[in-house]
Length: 313
Image 1: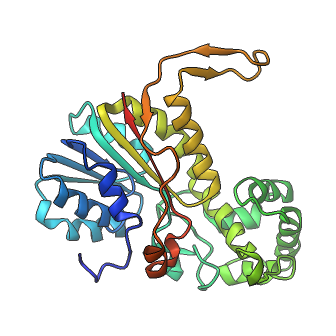
Image 2: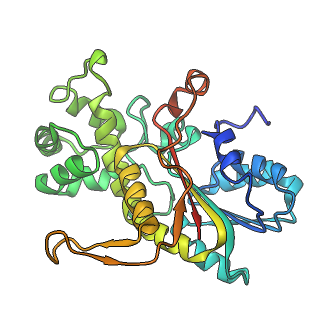
């Protein structure tokens, strides 16, 4: 493994195990990152003929491209969002795939680059775009959105209990000076979001998470991905998703269980009324796979990772 690459691939052994029994001809890596999962999968599955690696970040694509040079005849790299995988497959003349992996976390190299604005612990512009050409930045949101809209995203995407206070503090602070940096935002929020390390996660983490999800439309594209991925999988093909917070995991769990069920949930059509349907997948992981204690000790950022896997019937 190339130790110079500034990112540790989460749940690497568990991802390899998820696809161990699957013959992979076409594989889609929806969040290529630095290429750690890709390198391991290409080594383990010499039968792969096309490895489609997608990432919104051109820096990540360049880094992964260099790392995957030994498989240059097999890899196809595309800048874009993982929900566009079907478009890229069509461009390559491919009708289906045998495996797809999506790692929903922000990579370590993005967090550690202050100029990307993902972390309140490093001063940088309030950006948070995974795709540097994206139209919306975190600065746009905190400087122009209404207090009501700010509160909504902090409540829904950050699940922060003091969402009202956070939204109000931002609106009051921007009257004096527009927000420009991550530190500007952290300074404005600390008085209303005090942190006691003994009582869990820093609330600033939840606020920054909410802004990042909103900037990148993360839950919307995830919701689009799952049904489409199942459609494009070959029989016995597998989908693996690594999530890092409860909103993502809840959405993934719900959609996977629905696809594996023989009933449609028909809430609103009458209490207890469910229509029959054919299940399209089987659940490979009944409960999410989480990192070992050893992995968390070596990479603390992996501690909240959850892997869920399904197989197309």
